[in-house]
Image 1: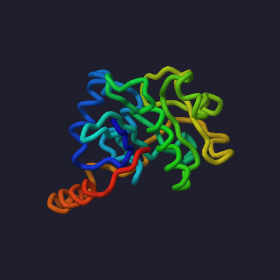
Image 2: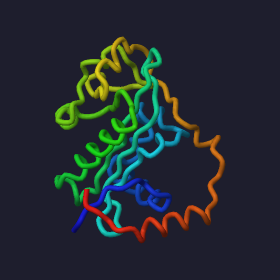
Image 3: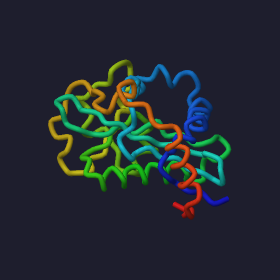
Image 4: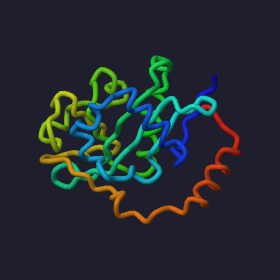
Length: 193
């Protein structure tokens, strides 16, 4: 089946949440990185889904954060792939798309909490995260970063904080306009990622 990576739509929310529940279970609500996403909206234009036909098979989102001393960056996560579609490159394609779009939009760095062997192939390492802390318990060796601009995290130290738009403060969308937008998007030709 042909896989496409596209920007997340309002109509994807239910499938995305089910996918995250399947991948992480109830533990996802207790993660330190979730404290940075709580009541926030993803960075503008940086929420992606992988779809095969009409099925959402993967998700990756980026969130605005400040690294300790105010260095602006993005938090990647959670990245999840449907259990029956793991190992075919969906997660890697989502991570590559997220990094490429973040770079194109001019961001300096991406931070995440994840497995170094997996994320190392994209350039993530713990080299510049040793002086950073998460808001809650976390495994230090899993706090990784990728500089999109050399030196973006030089001297970054202290607590990582959420800086993105607060979902509770956002005006409510016009449901009819969103439905029309989703319908127009569904009619566009699809391209493989």
